[in-house]
Structure formats: C-alpha cells, structure tokens
Length: 454
Image 1: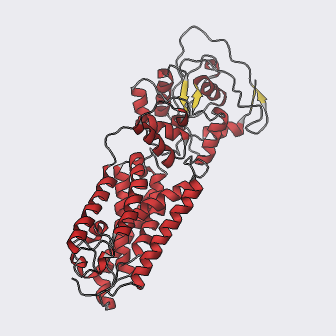
Image 2: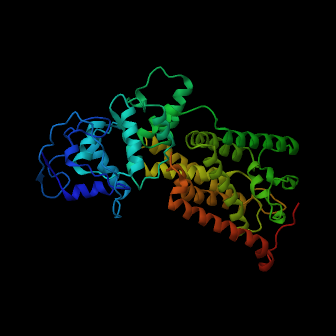
C-alpha cells in the first residue's frame, strides 16, 4: 500500500508531547484497543502531499505476547495552529462529521505515520478505546487529548473513562422525540447558545438541573421588588429620577457619594422607570438565563458584575457630574458578548431566524442608548440636577465584546490556560486601578463642580 512520507507525517508529528515509535515488527499486531490496522479510505495516495513511497506489508501477527517499546521524548519543534489541526483530523478521520472515529481507523493512521503522543495522553487514549464496547472514539475528545494547542478541560474525559465508556447518541438533537417540557427547553438552549453540534449533544445529555440558573433570576427579582417599593413610596412609575426623594436612595450612584463604594454596584437595582426595568429584565431572562445554564453561574455572574462595575467607573471618568441608575452595564455586557459570539460562529449557529433576531436586538439596544442620551441632555421635565448618564451602556458593551466573548467561546475550556484571557483580565485590572485613582484625585485637581449630594 502506498502512503505519503515526510510532509504528512511531519504534520502529524506536530500534534503534541513525546514521540511514540512503533517498531515495524509490531505494526501487524496493533496497539489501540487490541485491534489490527485497517486501510484508511479517507487517505488516498499523495493526499497529504509529497512523493509517494511503498511500504512492505506488515508480517503476520504472532500469538506470542508483545511488549510495547518505551516512550521516547520527542525533540522540540513548532506546532500546527488549531484550525489546521482540526481540519486535518476531521478530513482524514471523520469526513462524514459524525463526531465519532473508529478505533481501527485511528490505529491504522498511527501505525502508518508513527503519530507522536504524550505518554500520559497515550495511556488515557488506550483506556478510552479499550473501555468502548462499540469500537469508536469520540472525535471531540480525541482532538482535546492529542493536541497540545487545545485548552479543553479534561474533567469530562476522565469521568468518561471512569464510567467505563463514552455514551453519546449519534442522532441529531432535533430528531429526538418524546421529550418532556424541560428537556425541550434544554435542547432549545443548546441550539441558542452553542455553535457546534458535538458541544450541543454533550451539553444536552450531560445537563443537570442542580445548580439551577439562580443568579440572573435573583438579580431580576430583586430589581423588580426594589422598583415596586420605590414606585409605591414615591407614587411614580415613570421617570422616577425626577422625584426629589429618588436620589436620596442609598443604592443610587451619585458623584457626591463616591466614597461609599457599594454604590458602584448597587445602582443596578434602581431604574429610571417601568420602561427601562422591563427592557433590562426581558434581556436578562431571555439571554442571561440561557447563558448561565450553559456556561455556569460563576462565569456569567463575573461577566455581569464586571459590566456593572465598568459602567459606574466609566461614568465617574467621562461624565463626572452625572448620577447613575439601572443594570444596563451588566445587560449590555451579556448581550454584546452573545451577539458577537453568534456573528463569529454564524455558520455553526442553528437558532431559527438568527438574522432577523440579530437586527431586532441591535435596533432595540441602539434605541435604548438613544433614549438614555436624550434623557441625559434634553430632559423632558425640569430637574434639580443632572439626569443619569448613558455611558454605562457603552462600557458594558466593550466588556462584553472583549472579556465576554472569550468566556462564551470557551465552553468546557479552562480560561486560565488561555493567554488572551490573561491579557484581557490584566487590561481590565489596569482600568480599575486607573479609575480608583481618578476618583480619589481627579475631581479636586480638575475643580469639577458636582451637584450637592442629596
């Protein structure tokens, strides 16, 4: 059988770790899951480039037990980029995009090209293959295992080995029948948030109801309760900020009360009126809850609160005389991150009417920003002081596009293993330090005339 030499083998040798040489006399016996090598229909002569060469057929397998050669460390070299690796694996091992790879197919490729594998990863791969009764390897876990440039978490992979097999049905989720209401909702969330069919299936079958998405629900419920309390107290449900008693709330951010640090967060529970509360609550429930179900409470709560804090600090720098109310900083962080993730994974997203929904979302978000600008500079009623600023919307959107996009694109991945995550986190921390010093010194140095605190 004719196979391509150096160029294709060099690509495969760049996968990871240490080289695992397979002696010619052992190629007939196979090493992965006790199977014998089989020809690869997807790899044609010359498909990987370079001149062709013909290898002699392997000798017949012997009944005597064979010992594996020791694992030898590989010499350092450059690595493939992630996109090239994924394309190579999918085209050669999973051309039908089923999400599964036959053990014999992968073993034959290893035998033909002496695929280098890290020793620890090799042992895990062998254990996975031996524990799988159907003779198949999950494509996604194979990519995660053998690629040094992959930052996927391995907890789910280790659990699969501990359980004895990896059981993921091969049917598309949309073909599932007989689902209850909650499972249909979980399937809807999977198609709304995740761009990869393999990730959607993994999330659907591994989803647990505990812990529930309580953060966004709790924030929304608290905002509604606070609004109802102040509405009943002030007897005003629209444009509450024009009431003289409204700014006396200990929750509102006011430049005259910058020393009360909790106000940089608690302003998210106050709202201008029923229209702003309704807009924010709707987005928090429609986008925030599904995001929290998929990515977890820690990541989504961190993103939301990062947008809230960035919003108040940005207002204290760019609009120094204005107070601030509303959870728009956190809401725009979630929405902008989700929309950016949809755009960057447009081909893989399977949510219905995605173009129409994208346009509607952008129109609604833009109109809310325009309304905030109008209320800030052209208030319809006479007020004793400046009206709440609109800069929190823009700051939240920037946080979502930068930090939030990394979080949403890192489903089942460790953020701390990604260099770009630390770069964004360091940039955010630098902004926080600058904003703190600005609030301490800039108001006095610039002689800013702020309205008297209520």
